[in-house]
Length: 77
Image (tube, rainbow, N blue to C red):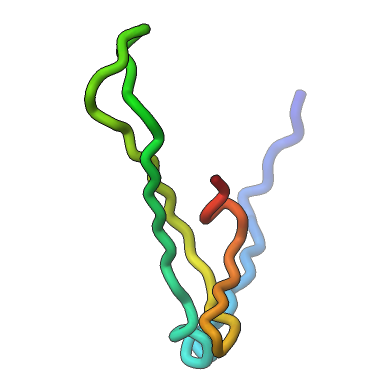
């Protein structure tokens, strides 16, 4: 028999990001990319229309030269 679960859960308050957003919010960017992936197929027969793949991500502008820092899944092709 399993022990009875407690109905009390201690929750921590969420951090206050107000100052962080005011200071660095302007450096946050959205990244989107689209690439042409190839011909669409139905079984072994290629169709005339092409398939596009897209991805979305985010990052931070970290340098005066516009260098953007992001993680690999945002543009992981």
